Length: 280
Image (cartoon, rainbow, N blue to C red; front, side):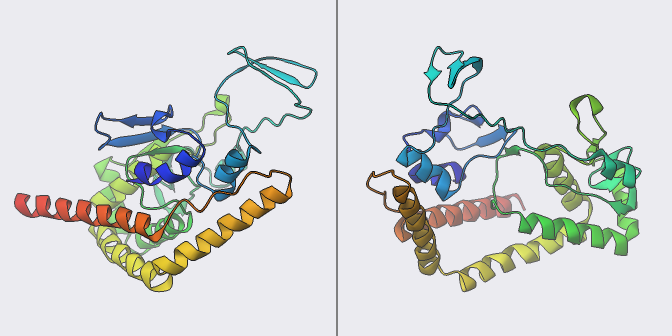
């Protein structure tokens, strides 16, 4: 559903998101895995910049450079390039490992000590189920998990004895401290915690529905779409004022489109509940 919901914005820039290298799907596109080192573009400014021609996304390798030109392996030459920025992301700071005396990260904990906790947002994307794209729900979850284990240390003994938690050590050759992990490490940590500690699983069963109700009460669909459209139109106006005189596109999502996605989500969960009830 996440991939399908991307179609209106990717269609706007004539890109088939299903063809990206990081997308692994079955023939019917019912099972999808996204696996990549970076995050995919989801912001208004990205799609509008592509639409207006202010930005171009090229998948290629650089063969050589000449004055104000970039020559690609494919044979294409990109002219009028007076400046190049090579964006390598960020590297973790080994001082954090040193401060925590971290030799091995066990989930989010240092050296299997439930009192010493360090978490950085995992790198990249490696998932087939997306509950959202914002940072704060994860940050709240991580905090609650640590607080729980501080209050109930016997649950930590269960985790350690299970051997289920992923581990990570520093990789100095690749400038990667122990506390900086990939997305899969984060996902496996969450699965292990929810599986091995019933109280955390129960907490998720409460917070999930609460967040759902709170979202709809505070941000009804009509006002949410209206705010999103307003910001979209403001970015379009900004790009036009920069000299891109193409007719601005309408906001690609309507209430009807979003309601369709919501109906699909509800149908999926109803199907899953029916399957679980039959197994029970």
